[in-house]
Length: 330
Image 1: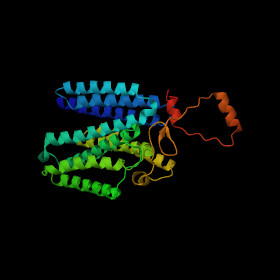
Image 2: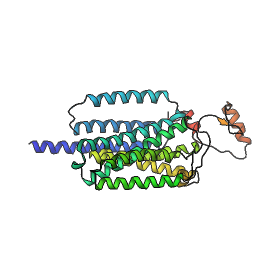
Image 3: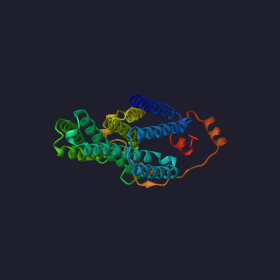
Image 4: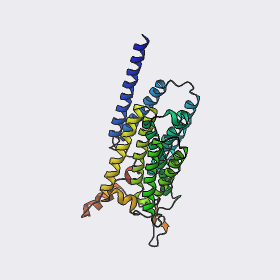
């Protein structure tokens, strides 16, 4: 009887994971249109809530105090940010959320390594821990750099120095080698800290030479990184929902990044290594000397726009800023 009950619970948990995943997929699909974006966001939130509830039940947590405290604190901070941040500042908020997601994945890998120890982990677990730590750390510092550039804390101009691209590539290759060595011989504890420190530095070096005008592409790519890091964390925790949802976010981020690059008629490598897209990424404009200036907003009405369009030979519609200001998602 006990075995049958256990089997039923396992099947029910997997079914609920499947339902939560379906909510994620439908939510991401509906985010593709301004008309359905709001409901898509709500569906994804429901899927996340269901996934968290099922995971807590599945893992048979013995002490819920820290979990409840974290959920309440995180929920309050998220609610305040969501209500206080203007729609035109969403890219900065998304960058910050990406960074926190990467940090969470890296901390999961770190915690599992400390909990089980090198001797209790197999090669597959060590590979996923190394990748989760690598991708999560890059996402954290890269997202913080993007947040700073969009907010004006860091200059929007590309910051470069001699042999920067070579250094970035060498550092990336070194981190991959270190991750492989960590999986091969986890008893060398120094490798763990090398991966952590090198990955944090790599995130900074990756975003540093990219101009503020290209930050939306970078944020989309970092969003993909955060999804991949979450998927790796899912392998670490043996959580199928985290694996699937992370893979969905990673794929969606890569697709969006490619679409944005195609729209700009540039390759992703050109964005990452071309030191292009310079200029201030904050609100306002710049004069001929490059000094930031306040721009005058000219208000108009539908009749004036109709007259101007009637006399125009060519009309170019540039979506984005106006869509956010008008709160078209409502």
